[in-house]
Length: 258
Image (cartoon, rainbow, N blue to C red; front, top):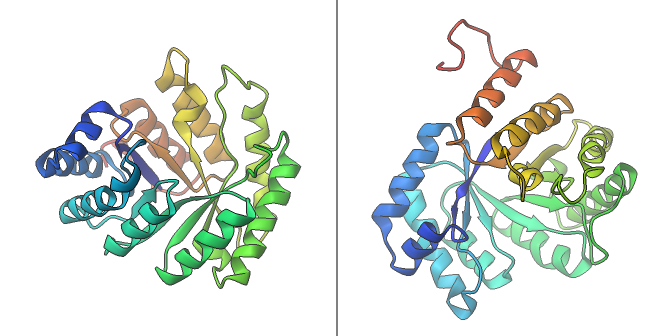
């Protein structure tokens, strides 16, 4: 599944539209993401909104879902803002995201249960991101078992092994792939997985090439979903080609258009 990353207040134009409550801009952007092939939409009001955060998230969620019935991935570190987004969300919801910190799990797993939402679980805690695949898998297992204690079953979880920029942590690219393979052993059926793809190319040139190449490698290791820019043609062509080669979609001569 492709989760669009573009409805995010970190982008200047989107942040301006949120500030001005420009529903036309947001809905046109939403439709472009859908037409480009998004299967879900990450919705993020951006940083620095403070007490205004819950109201801004309610507005953004309502505005986006007027234009699309795709699942909405509510993306914010603020608990009140997260709750406001989930309350406004009539589409299927995904919480983005919890870490393995006890305080965050205690707050967010009950919200996932209350709103019948999926939840992205980042394999990191207060000490940071583990350095190897086995440690990521141990943290993923902790999060899955804790979620079940709150009646959030494994099928509602998307495990995120946390992609890091190749420019700063080149050794981690392969370790994330190893982690994806390890995650498949944690449950039957295998848990779903997700990454924030563009993290790998932060600070790099040739970002589309890096993103698309790494995405193919991740899909070969069993990746279920990625948060990315669906308007990046090279990356989306890679998604479609990998789906054919992995026997997930039927091949035809014009499969890129199909």
